[in-house]
Image: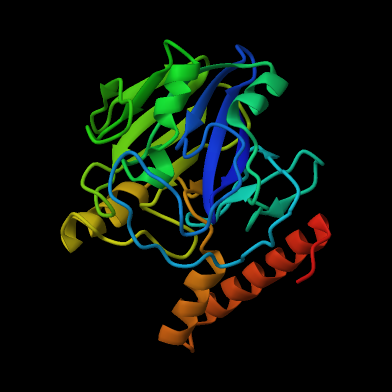
Amino acid sequence: MKVKVIPVLEDNYMYLVIEEHTREAVAVDVAVPKRVRAAFGRREHSCGPRHRRPRPSVRTPRGSPDYAAEAHPLPGALCTRAWRPNTGSHLDHLHLPNSHPFQLLEIVGREGVSLTTVLTTHHHWDHAQGNTELVRLLPGLVVLGADERICALTRRLAHGEELRFGAIHVRCLLTPGHTSGHMSYFLWEDECLDPPAVFSGDALSVAGCGSRLETTAQQMYHSLVETLGTLPPETVFCGHEHTLGNLEFAQKVEPCNNHVKAKLSWAKRGACVQVHREGRPS
């Protein structure tokens, strides 16, 4: 199982999951299907209400080069999205340039894969806006999710439902909290040494979670602790890059928490490494 990490908009992540034997591909949270320049504060949306989000924890300058990272899941702690870049080295991923997102279909073409399905975590425009155009460009494309408000939805999924894409299994986990119809996707592959991974959208991020907008605190607690928290402690692919901001906030709330201090130090080191790797000033 190979995962292409595609940064879009200000701080979102879109993903392309590839079954390497059958060359079938599944996209997760298609915000933009084609190459565009992010128009900060002036983006149009066609499905679902806009909602206020925190500012990105690391803001890249305009003019950053196009980038799409290739990843295989690595063992790590839940709430830590770790990946192996295609250089073969190990690096915990924090941020990628996103001023000019790769066209999703361009990546599909370069990889020589067949995109058959879109998995959408929730209906908000920054996770589902690209579905309509992608369906128009790829007739027969299947769009799946748990909320009828998702753009171009083909079929509504149920909690606990399992899907199959070649050797890749997908377990659909309803995780209400950020929205009432939020679905996370737990993926694993038969006879593969790579650990499983969960695509958590806005339910869970590194050291944080999405704002509770439509459900009760009890429902959100259940989603985070009893649904996502009981998964194997492996890789989490989240919907936004808020790592530094989340940890800085946590340190203000609990200044004596050594776990938070260590994690914040790790995050800052990773951000510096990424800036150095891309040749951008810090």
